[in-house]
Image (cartoon, rainbow, N blue to C red; front, top):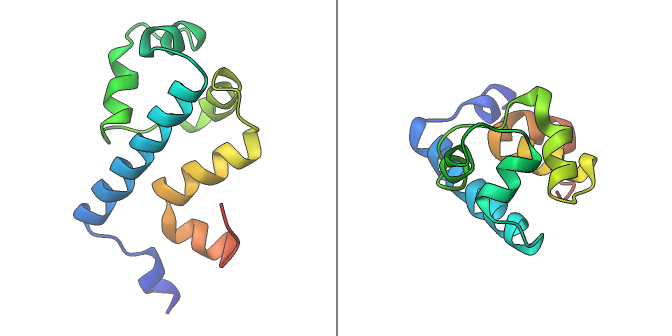
Length: 101
């Protein structure tokens, strides 16, 4: 049922963010960037924001998705699709169904 697809409990939300955090860390490391270097590329005041995201706390602001993709050397559409699959899995499922991220 569609309504069930959109429901998530806090533990599921945390699990999705932890998984995404590990992925973001891997993408950053693959790009050869430290947390501080990525923060500099994104004009962030504190590199600790990167650490928080990589540890499953917080979200990348929607209006900055394209900047993050560019800073990490990622194709924007695929990058945002991955973010959506973790931040909003119900919405992702509705939009993409069985399509792979």
